[in-house]
Length: 86
Image (cartoon, one colour):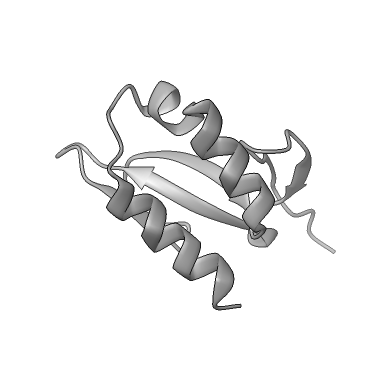
């Protein structure tokens, strides 16, 4: 059996299988997207599929630090929608 790649959640700092996490990607046009496939080109960051981890990331502005880019409330709302729609 093939080993699953591990990634670290930006909210809780726990290592989990890549498939269990949501990938947020910033491409070379400075567009921030939610990448469910895990294959979009660009710099990626991962968070758990959990609203508490998202709230920690928003409060600490960790995504903005990682991407070195101001993230709009619209993107955070989109992430909330994805997490709450499970």
